[in-house]
Figure 1 (tube, helix red, strand yellow):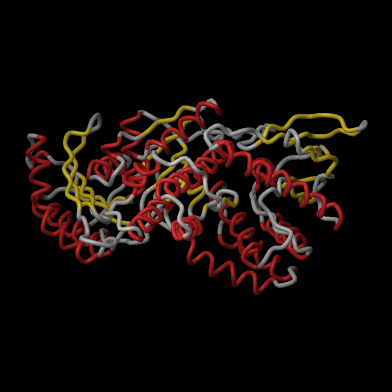
Figure 2 (tube, rainbow, N blue to C red):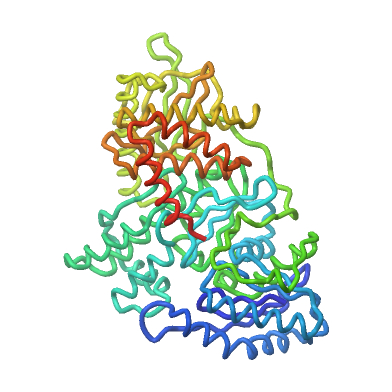
Length: 529
């Protein structure tokens, strides 16, 4: 039996190894505005017993048939979590049944895998408070990318609330978007594997004040924000060489998002699985499924271990029941471009052609590809001028949106680390190289181990298409954040190694201590659950 109650929904689900036996829910709908935690908790306290009784009745079972009680331990709203945790502990003690606290996003992953039969997918988890790209690597689910400010669902709900649309706002925005066709100039905010949605909310509200149609604003919100997370999802496929995609979470019910992800998967030759819409929203069955897998893998909890954790992250949970793929692709192909060997007046070269992405609105796609081509050319040229290790820029062709550059001989940093392992020396070398880049007033914008090469023992930067030649401390700190988080996700990097990188950066960078301080503030606000 699984009990869910992290936010607006209280639910009870019962599963076995093969199927969902029953699932019953009750949702709190605020009279106005967003969710009020105390009022939602009062709702849960009032409805949790009837919900449990209904789930048992629908299943034809009694508590004597239940072999495990699982409950959502976090993340979520504290008052709501406490109601469900108390109910779970009460049932466990009264009926002498083992108890298991479950990470809420883990439930979304595992109910999606159970129903779709996906084995080892990259998951796009999109809900009110969460926007994450998740993959199983090295014994647990790793967060490869996430929102840097607010969740996508939260952004949709805030936009709806500002315009008198009842909670939840997503379904109504989807209906209005179907009647829109004009793509407004809403910011497309992607940096590497990270996304940002607060600027979209601000721009959308401003367009309404200027007199734009609500339908066109809703259309633009969806086209831009969904394209952003689909791009990051595809990039994660190439980082990990996974072959399956799983879409889950409340926002995953949106049919335009499902169409985008399906289109991207088809073009990339991947298998896309969509969680049954009935189980995209928070539900008890997903908690039951995750709890079942944890218990069958030998994970145990005592009553005293069942305190709630409102900021419980999925990457804190050991997941031994999956054997994840460990093969990584180092081919020239990428999520956004096709790269092929060529010759430039007798010199070995690579030509990088920006690929049309049919899942994106065609005008948006053209805008993104053109902007990134120009940016990459400008930044590579500047790197060449100031002596930053990078491929020599040979040519930029704006007609076919391609760029030709020197062909470097050597592995990516990602390949190098997998073959040679991680140590403090390479981390310190990274700190020195990034400090040199930033001291020349250049930010990279997509600083991951896949965009750094190791050439004759030196680090060389490639693909700076999301960077800036007029950066501020936030841009510099974003580079440090991206490389730190990607290393943590793709490798078992301890804090000592991260500090070796940051200490060397701070020592050698022009404004190192100030930028590190900005980074620390950024991390506190960015680490969403």
